[in-house]
Every structure is written in C-alpha cells, then in structure tokens.
Image 1 (cartoon, rainbow, N blue to C red):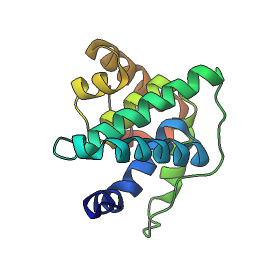
Image 2 (image 1 turned 30 degrees about the horizontal axis):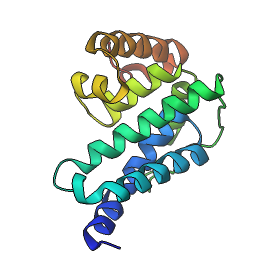
Image 3 (image 1 turned 135 degrees about the vertical axis):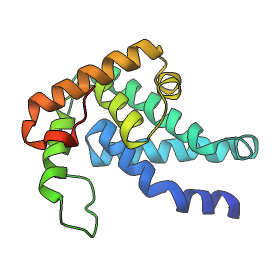
Amino acid sequence: MDREFAAFVEARQHRLLRSAYLVCGDHHLAQDLLQGALVKLALRWSRVRDGDPEAFLRTVIYRDAVSWWRRRRREDLSDDPPERSDSGEDVPNRLLFAAALRRLPPRQRAVLVLRYFDDLTEARTAEILGVTVGTVKSQASAGLRKLRDLAPELGEMVGRG
C-alpha cells in the first residue's frame, strides 16, 4: 500500500467517520460510507493525491449517503451516539444535539454538518450535495430553526440561521 495514502487515511479517518455519522445517524452506515469512499479514493489516488483528496472523500460520502436515502425512502434512526471524547463536561448537550440532529430531514442534516461541523463554505456545500447555494442557505436556515424547536434547552449552542 502507498505510504502516503496510508498516512492520509490515518490522519483523517476519525473526523470523516464522525461527519458521516452526523449525516446519516447510523454508525454502521457511516462506517460503510467511509469505507466505500476510501476504496474509491484508493483506486484514484494517483490522480487525486496532488489535488484535494479530503474534498474528494467528502463528496463521495455525501453523494453515497444521498443515494442510500433515495433507495431507502425512510430514515433508520439510531440511538447510539457518536464516539465520546475524553472530556465529559458537555456530554448531555452533545447527546441532546445529536438526537435533535437525527430528527432533521436528510438534506437539512447534511447541510448543517457540512456547513457547521466540517466548516465548509456555502458554495462548497452546494457543490458536494449537487444543489444551489440558495438551497444550502434555505436548508441551513430551516435546519437551525428546527433544531431550536426540537431542543430549545441548547440555547445559543444552536446559532441563529
């Protein structure tokens, strides 16, 4: 295996897995999405490595998640929270936030994860999801509003959209 590819995967896999989990709400599906994306990246590594391989992975993960939603036609929510960090100071809020996030429609959830967890621009989010910047803006606004409705106790953790 290419050492550069292995180092790239080692450095980014945990964060990408958390992003995939936040988008799909199912730990096993998130693992499958990431694994499938890594296989696709490995097959194209020689062409992608000098560009932005992380952007390639994110695009594959989110597009494959959308394909899965379309095939499934309904959400399969999981009660399992994502991996916990060593710091337990804000666990109740994170669990409440994750539960509320899982109750959002898939597109709103994907937009919020890409924009605020992955810290991508509106344009990059639109490109990954294959939608317009206006759709990203409206889905982000609607998603934040719904999060505030679902979990008002989070207060300012859920910003204004």
